[in-house]
Amino acid sequence: MSESDITVDALVVGAGVGGIYSVWKLRQSGFSVRLFEGSSNFGGTWNHNAYPGARVDSEFPFYQLSIPEVYKTWNFSERFPGYKELRSYFEHVDKVLDIRKDTTFNAEVIEARFDDASSTWTVKTKQNHTAKCKYLILCTGSTYKRYYPEFPNMSSFKGDIHHSGLWPSDGLDLTGKKVGIIGQGATGVQVVQELSKVAGQTTVFLRTPNTAFPMKQRKLTVEEQNSWRPRYSIILRDTARKSYGGFPFDPPTSASYADATPEEREELYERLYNQGGFAFVGAIWPDYMFNPAANRAAYDFWARKTRERISDPVKKDLLAPLDPIHPLVGKRPSLEQDYYECLDKDNVKVVDLNTSPIETFTSKGINTGGKQAEEHSFDAIVLATGFDNYTGAFSTMGIKDTNGVELKDRWRDGVRTYLGLTCTGFPNMWMVYGPQGKSADEPISIFDKILIM
Ligand code: NAP
Image 1 (cartoon, rainbow, N blue to C red):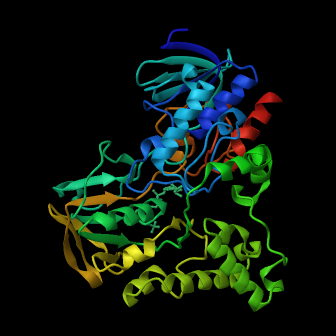
Image 2 (image 1 turned 135 degrees about the vertical axis):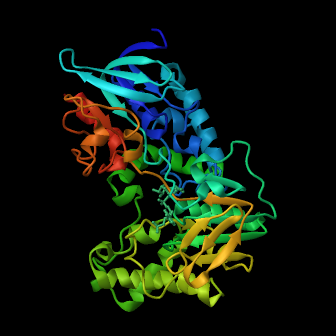
Image 3 (image 1 turned 60 degrees about the vertical axis):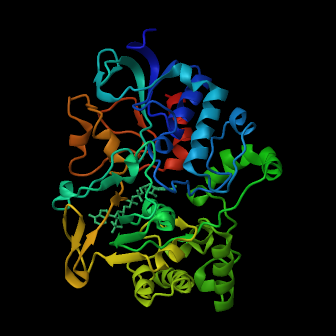
């Protein structure tokens, strides 16, 4: 089969976790398969994201493929591995499964059309590959298309300016430099933790504070992993899959927040907070999602714990206000290691964008107006402003429905899918980790569906 003219049962797009699993599963089920990857390596988000501090916040052992050949011969070094270790993990995965033999790298999909008469998709890439397939499986992830806010005069800044998702491949030495960071999602938290330790002056432009929970990072031993390994097949394929959020935490002993005494509440909050990771939001009484009083009590506990770690009274109120900006988990909380201690340092400034908005970029930095009107000068600015999540990748692939209408136009007035897996008018096109999908289940359930067709 020529590299540029391919005919297979299934074409998979994207060589991250979902794409690799899909290739493996399709092979197991007897399908011929090809994987198109736009970049030159495996890893998906871990291949693209190399910003300082990039690290997964899904804890060991749950963030790994449930493929025995892979997990039997791999050990992680930390509870929450960093991106370099995750890149090594993908090398291991390829070594064991030889995904490479079915992969075309540097193959960016720019067109996909379905022919009704032959029930076939024809997929073209920017690099002139053409593939014909019955099944088109899109594993393009959530964080492919970077989001750049349109601040006035951005291009006038003369220093380094980088989006977190496009960090220079040979790194960037910011030791002793003046750095500005916009965005405090999971990425911004990790960037602040790293850069504030080396930069001379760090300025964080904050719109919404992150309700970040302690990660409680720790080293893992091989012995510990050997003791888990016999249970991986059940934990990864069953227990985690059936749990809320993918992490099988033990449920609380009483049924709801309302049933618990104040002492029981405090004991559970304290225990889960100290357990680290997403234990707190994943294992307190689930009614905190529906009962405002339960949600507020959980927030108040988090705010009390967080405020104890911040000495500066202004930063305390900005980063962990006594009154929540939104209900707990109304925005996804992140995990942190010493984020609040980093922000509390004298050489770290926090600018509240709600009272002091960015007025303009200048050749030297950023001017804010309002309460903290100031000319901030920087050597470098980091945009940790996120992505066109989930839909971003689909909008660049030129996928057309049976009437010739592009997917991005079909979704112009709102995304419509069936269970986040399929979309009417796109026969045999499947989305893994698609918008409206339940990501954790998809790599498995998608093939259950294909196999019964
Ligand atoms: P994100 O969660 O979308 O956060 C973007 C940040 O930029 C937010 O703080 C947002 O503020 C801010 N922002 C956006 N536009 C702005 C503007 N015009 N002015 C000021 N601030 C602005 O992006 P992310 O942190 O890169 O994360 C992307 C996805 O990857 C998320 O799903 C995240 O969970 C995931 N992720 C996971 C890990 C991990 O596993 N460890 C690491 C990184 C990312 P507002 O909140 O006010 O909108």
